[in-house]
Length: 259
Image (cartoon, rainbow, N blue to C red; front, side):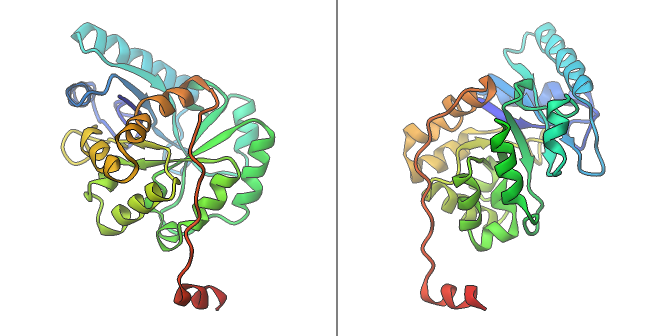
């Protein structure tokens, strides 16, 4: 399996705090069937600002350590980037890290509350520049929890979405789980990733979520969400996805939306 969102790099954000912790996370991932990880440190969020050069340096260092330890896991560069409307120029000039440095896909972190104004205009501009955003953990955004059609609109503009394994298994609470299941039901989720930060509290485990997703979308598509689709994103290829569906509002929801 492929884990496209993981904070395994040591000492550069709120994920692993040491090489030893990174090795322990790697062993957990391998035991769970993960063979490829995209390291995605937080960037551009006002707290962490890690340069692409630093990310590549740390990825190379970790891969050498994994090889020395005989751990069958490969790590690729990426970043979990806070939304900034100046990102397009930053991507063009190499100031922010795209997935595997491919200049095609970028992991974008939505805020926990609300959706930034003018995000649709920003997505339109990204599309014009050949950049595809992958929204990370949209199921944890309260606005999308209230109305998944918000995400439907973004996906119709060409965006993809990645849901977190622990949301599907209920370990992030009732609302993220309910939203994650709805996103699966309406073809609004394309990748499952761990968003791992640690060994115990947020470990790099996909298998339990894979089983939960299979109950909604079927085992074949659930497996694609942790193999074929993230592989295409890593390679910068166009990926084949099911048609997104919008959720029809009930009578009372329609009344509330008019007010």
